[in-house]
Amino acid sequence: MTRILQRIRSIESCCTLVRRKCCAVDLGKRWPHANISITVTDKQQIDQHSQEEAAKFLQADFNQCFQQLRHYDSQLLDILKFQFGSYTFIVGTALGLYQFGLKEQASLTLPAVGVLVVGLIFGVLMYSLAIRHRVYFVLVARYINEQRGFFLKQKPLGFENKTRMYTNPAQPPYFNWRSSQAWYLYFVAILNSALLGVLIFLLVGGSDAWWVLGVAGLLSFIAQVWSAVRYLTSREPLSASVAVFERE
Image (cartoon, rainbow, N blue to C red; front, top):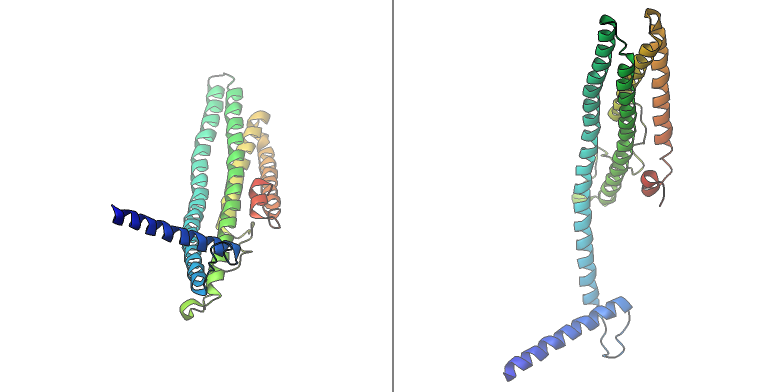
């Protein structure tokens, strides 16, 4: 029993010593009561442990960001495919109702217009979602570039990055007219414009209304692209929090 009590007291003494040394590290000075100071070796071990934990965190964060990057890129393509299929169904339904009404001498223009209006609202929402995905994609890509640049500037293992893999945290830009994601936006804008043109064609009616369809579609396309460019370029000087949430 005595040995057990001695062992318990010994463990308690060790724990007390560890706590005192940790406090000495935090205070950065000698422990006032027990007269215990942190040694250089202790500091080196603590610093080394902190560096190892930081490296593990950055490695895990880098891998997770890469997965996010692929997710956002694939999401844009999924939006495009889903919207193309939806528009095919919507336009086909609306024109089918319109043609059936003409054949049966029944006025089905209003239901056809209703279908197109719902589809157009849906298309605008999907277009906005695609723009927001571009913002998320750019932020994550820039963060990855910053991490890559931080490690590669130290030339680990003599690696010189001769291919000049992306390390600029200011790239890619939010809007780049040549990027594949910008072309996704163009295509979605074309689909929305075509839907609006068909809607106006049904409202105006007549075989001479094709020019109205063309003009309305062109103006709609220009307006959508202009709004996307203006919104994306306005994100450039902002921090990540403000760019996404509109506030810090």
